[in-house]
Image (tube, rainbow, N blue to C red; front, side, top):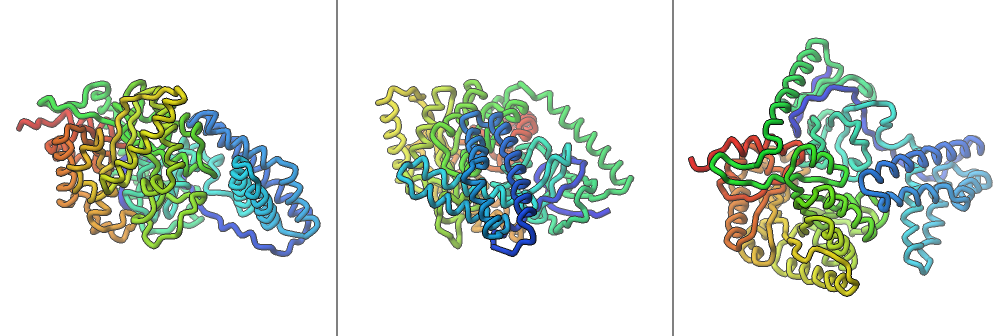
Length: 543
């Protein structure tokens, strides 16, 4: 039995087979081949596997984000089946005796250049698509991506850490839990685990190797312990603990459907954070009263090119309709820092967390921003959507955002397109500058939502992804709490509501503190909703 110790990010108990997440190094260098027929067969097999993946992705995308956005995977299938594409690769293998990886890459580059040189914008955009499908084929030629979920009914994933784009590729229906050797409690893996409500332990410091792949594993999210190939005694103990955990969750059902109100009558709006429309069933299943943070960047991270206005509209509309009149706060794109997207062509930065990201990209690329705002406004006709701008540091930024939003409103008015003319507009308070300027900023918006993850990072000058600094990273730091209190007080002074959508919102040790500060709304991962409601209902703020 191998025992690992890490940091827990969700308190469940998971038992199941362990699957190692691997990243294959893709080499497209030209190398000698032994047989043309072997290389042709390798290419065809890789192409068929890529085609099968795309078909599966299409089905899942239809379910999660609708047919219009899923159509990109149909386009990719057609391109993968295109005669010019296939023959270009096979010709290189036959005539130049080229290995399949190099043949795929050179053909893709040639076609991409051809698309880029065309006058039509639509055809130019196909350059990114041909490169994307080719990367998929190259990945198959190099051994396949990530995890082959077909081998498992359900699985515990082990990795060093996972990037946002990698988490989006996972079959979340089959994931029992996560174990990572690196990462932090604020990493994207951790956030995904909390959203899904599955046990996860990060930062074990132990790199796992192929010899443990497929072994039985247990994650004890209550202690941060992980047992690989557990002995009978440990397994029996964990199964007993799992039953107790299930009984605890069953007991929470008594607060389902009841108001989130303290014993002395203070009402709190209890919302959920989500990463994409695929999380909507979890919002509803956990009885959230709305969505306090919809991370719209999933649309950009999942795509090989800028998502269209209609693709975005369908995703936002889906969320608005699913919530049936309850508030859905949608954050405009927060690309940059650790959420990298190749087609944005952002310059390399030594400190990307302080660089070109979020609202800075939007105000620098107004057309990109307007596309998202049009989609958001159109979707607001189908439910109660609120727009939230991230990474704000000044009144000027908010005024610019509102000016651009007004321009989009006028464009829609001119075309007779319906939208909610009373839609709320707010900002995330996640920089010390925004907290310190909250008195002035409050006069510009309808609400504040405090992003405690970044607010802590920037206040303490500590990279929240840097696990070696976890000892120093204190979300309960008095400076952070003072900034939160200041923001709440200044928001209320101006007559606007103030919420918390960062991970601190689910910290039950701080719930009473936040309520006494006067917070109006807490937005947390869906599985944290019922425990938080139970906590709120147990408090009496009059004492």
